Image (cartoon, one colour):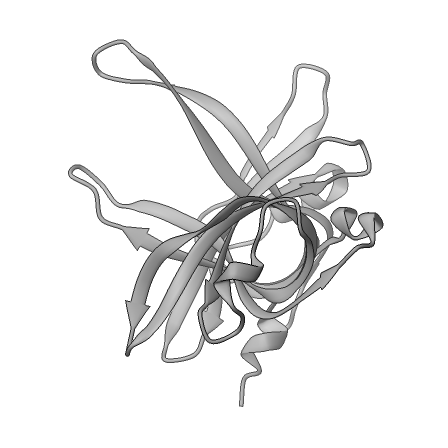
Length: 207
């Protein structure tokens, strides 16, 4: 039997920067969404969305500036729009603990096993750095899947370019946020945020 926690496991530390707001309800279980700030070694800060069940913790404990450590999964769902669906990503909490240790805010470790579901897009930056964008389908219970955008660098990017759709791969990296600008039909510029896993370790898995 497939172990879905091993397919998708995230350990991350951060500081709360937004108090929880109601997200959705499933079978009388309410879920709440909030934002945390986590640091890279470069001191750049990623702002990441978190989903948590009311049954895990008292929502009043999730105060701004509290430091926490999360064990969970990186999940996705398709939000229906007027013209097309939008892939919405968030960290789903399985376990949570509070701490006063400031060093925890650099903790960001995502381990995924999934299938390449779109042809990898390989390119080079103007400075010659190799990059590949790939979308991974990670199996979940009840025949669901999470679709996780990943970015690879250097040799990993070049190797990923050779893989076919349906290839099973094992990935290790960190969840990151990235801001970008999108031009609207009326000419206005809208600032948006994308989430992806920046991959440090990558391997093909024989089925």
